[in-house]
Image (cartoon, rainbow, N blue to C red; front, side, top):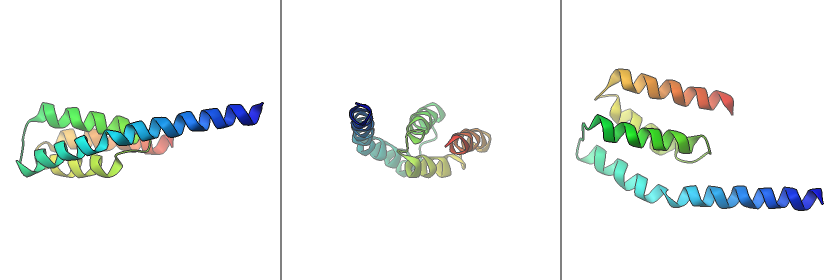
Length: 94
């Protein structure tokens, strides 16, 4: 009985992670576009940083988050520090 419950939970988590991964190509394209066009649209960049930060909690999107944050540091140093601190807090929890 316990093995079945464990396997069911494991399958749910795997399906959830696959679902998260399915969103990555669109996010990758949008991050690439922001960087390539040298966008300085704080609201849009921060929206994507928020989205990616929420994905990193689930083990998805770390590299993309860091890539966008590295770009953002040239636009808003203070905002970058905020996001690094949030990312570090999440890393410490894991």
